[in-house]
Image (cartoon, rainbow, N blue to C red):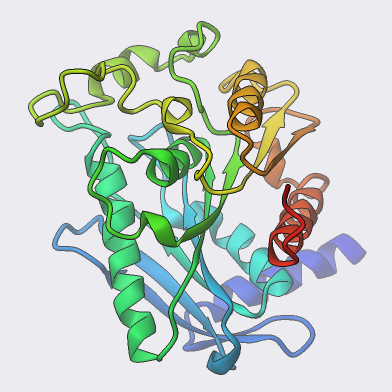
Length: 292
């Protein structure tokens, strides 16, 4: 009975997303706008949630979905976004779509450009509301790779990278050169479509390094919290060890955790509360200046 009530409550929340206001537990309310265009391409859309009390917004959480860089949709993470909003009622939220790769298009720089374009839209929106935002980038799987790449990579002309306060990496590939990652079932597509070689790139950086998040980590990289599945058959657990090593070497404040289950199990009934609570504690440490 208790489980059925939870499902009913969730259904009411998701249904209420069609309205201009959503109401969560503990008198938490958000104004919502769905499918806002932040670019000219039909894929460049986001769902925007602003707290009712707009005078106390501390930052904007930007959620980037997964799907192997060529699939997925922001709606896949609506439930997660609503759970995060309950935990962070003093933040605005943007759940974004981006241009997907296919046989005639590429992942980089299109998809990192889309993150920058979305942030540009949010900065302008924030100016209208008279506050200067800092961003928390949360990505899962391919979206986590893109979030890390955007936050770390200093090669791209991404206007708002310096406004990224934190990166939340959920089962994201951080090192594309990891031999274990090459067992990924769609690796051939990723290898062929990861970077657009027709774009001008520096001659002293290999095309393999440009889209590789760990290559760009330095002492000024944003604090990062990561989650990896013990039995993940898509993103190997070796990615956690590689990322931890590079972040620690550069003295970037970071935490990483393992959860039971596979690639999609981070968001199940057992693991989701742990993930969200861990993110909350991590942000508190940053806000309280307890980073090393």
